Length: 368
Image (cartoon, rainbow, N blue to C red; front, side, top):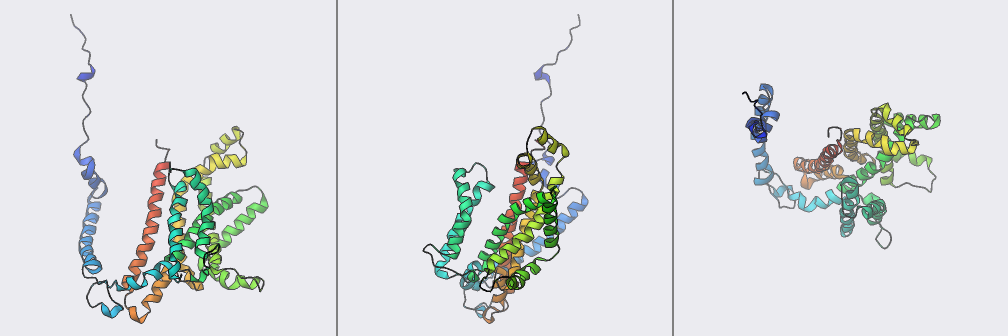
């Protein structure tokens, strides 16, 4: 009598490993560098250019470089002359800040990391207390940098170098995001006064270059102030940089708000949430997640725009570099100087970019 064949689990074909050419290093190379003849040709050309450039750069920057000397005449080889770093690095970092007080700048910089940690990282130990520290950090940093409460007062015209870039850039980044959110919501408001104020502010600020706003803050604004009243130059720069970045930030966030489906608003209303709760709990978190690339792009542009402070007499790291290469003792070292400046800016901007990518992946719940 015929007995039907029953296939058991042991009789099933077992899962086979993926082909070696599609996973691991070989798979990554095929997918990213050798996917088709055009990509292969571009990869080979790029490798050839790197093969020519990298050994020459290493030889110039490290092997043949000179590290000691009191001026450019001490560098006699064909390599880079890094002798100026020993004598000018403090100016690049602190500008004209008193050398005996630079420890205050260092402490403010170190304290910046625990102040940012609870907002940029997850599961930080003691994050509840660190958030309160983050709120107090601007006051602490201001006291450390400017003085008071037993510390020697340092005028802000002594600020300079990378310290000035970081101060203006960080203040602009921290302030422009909440102001941009308020402007984006105000532009969509049903109240005409709020809506038109937001529209006029955004369009007026976006319609002029940042350098124009800096000139306004430095030349025109004091005319309208009382004779006995003077605004600090660094504060004026921070205000204008923040206003400029906030206008662009508002448009970035407005794009995120418009990308939210109408059903999300209706769902919030169905749950009985008022406007503020709907925005805080449902709409804004989604809009900000969508807007992360644009927000970080605005931050990066803001940080690089801090070099424009030189037009109102402040010397950031680029201004210090320009002044140094004009010094007869170091004339002709523009390549080495601007390489160092570029590395400073690249390290900050690249860090923001990589964090943005990491944040996008962590918040990408649509594909889970």
